[in-house]
Length: 351
Image (cartoon, rainbow, N blue to C red):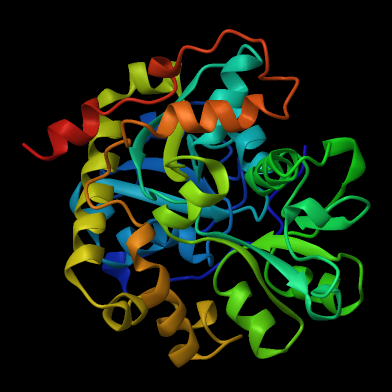
């Protein structure tokens, strides 16, 4: 089982201290949600499927705004570029929860493992299928994916799910495409530059970096709810905080505090400009593209963030339909969507 490939960002301000740690480094066998830090706050370990991605921005922003600490939580954020690896770390008990895509909860239930989303952060995938500039004349839609090498963050990741979904929707069987795990950021860019992939699915700020370098251009844009509906046939909720259901049932107070912090962060995002949001992020997040480009990218996709943290009513069914279209792990299996998410904590956060 892989450990996180990189651990990001130490905070300067003690009040907002971030301990970005590798999995299991505390040396304790008890769940982190049960432990306490020196200051008497509850320690929770969350792994994020790419801390510097704008689709997961609410995790670091909650930390930077001090909302976790104000709730009495010592939240340790660790980074794992491929969401499927973050999922595995949670299932192994090395971290308490994952900030990743909702679709993992459906996939896991079909495999007999019960997890649930407790707060929805995005109401659209925030992903774009980028085609290599010199392949743009040959790949004009997903119908042209046959025989192509397509970049994804990891095999079994949500980008892999979505790539297969686009192919099948366009009439291309999944056995006629090759998924290539290239993570995001510099490794994704290098894969484009060295022609290891013909196209690939990624997020901001990698999208902007590819365009700036003239290496790739957008082919299928799912950074808005409208774009997701056009590409996938309905609302596709993506980034969320999800945890094992047994952990939720035994740590309800801690889960409520986490959700309270995330809901406050979502409201803060919707009440502030892209520039103000970007100004709260670590400088390392935008050094590759520059602050101006980072802000512009965020402004273009700011509508992807949920205004309230609730699961969109038609979202789970759309995700199930998408996964059932290509995944033998999901197709034909009984899935109880009501057990893959809960709105209870978000509704209580608003009271």
